Length: 152
Length: 109
Length: 251
Image (spheres, helix red, strand yellow):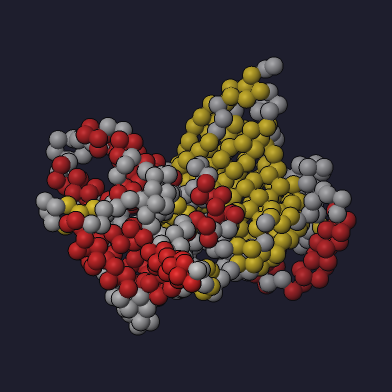
């Protein structure tokens, strides 16, 4: 089951609305870690809603390796960078992906999630504008003592 | 495990064709946040940067942080416009560098 | 009529006892992890297969011999990993894939020994097991192997550790039940060596046995002991008929 953030579907308005409510209502109570990470990378600039899609499973079996795809909205001019934040990780900044033509504004990778959280993808345009989307991901707990660490 | 890469890079494309590069590298991406069974912090050891040069141009570069899963997987796409060398490069925080080279031949229709 | 029903019931019970729910752990994976295992490029276990191929061709020891010099292409060992562990009547002991490769390394190549669960050994075992992908697990448990097999079965059923649990308690009697966010597996071993996300790396059957022992707070077994190999033989027999998946991906 894949969940999409902002998309170009007819439901776009609804989804944008949902994303907007995230931006407005959830951002302020997002972790201090995320706020600091955004501040460090973007200064006082804050993202508008949309312009980027985040594809990730909504239910994750193990937080050690989670497939994600981030892509810019193809109907807009290509951004110069895509960013991914995992607000509840010890380090919220996940990755930044810098793009020059003829590369497409899209990448896939696998990330770590230290628990259920709202992932945030951002697109950054060369004029300084930012666009964001967020997707809620639930990470389930494994059986037994999966925090065992060492030689076993 | 020692640093090594699996890469999938097409060697031929039509002009204007969108092609995909897939990469997988053996690396623990030790976060620096974990402690061992004696309570000692395991020092951070991660790859910090991945980049792709195509015909001399850096078309993609990526900052890798501890939130990237062990044995990092990265895939991206670009438009094949000219024949040229492709160089993929990974850099680690201990100064290690891994480079994979390939050539893309672009066929004009 | 009653007689028939009784017979039918009896047959069902017997079949149930003798035929555990032999479903690969693959069936318990979600779509993302299934896709990861099925993707021969992105499956992280393939990094070890690659490394194994390099080691396979690398000359070592005083005679500068490689695996290839004797065995040719790795595919020549296709019908091996699915039949291990096996009892060697001449040495009167069980061997698993790790031990066969280690013996080959020290006795034939006369090269430096590969340590248990080292990345080099895992690379070679994964390369060889990968050749058997798709073949059914099929171990010999009768004849001279029968004593070890019965030891393995007893070990599987013996309670151990501070949690006082046997392998059978979870993987036989409670298989399919939920434990936190997971479904308890049937303890099938057809995926090994496999890439486990919990480990962020590859591990052998013996590493999994050690991990399980640790999880029930039991003293781990020496992975090269005949006791540990007898348990591995029993586990392989329980998994009989399942297609080998190495390198599988598991949580």
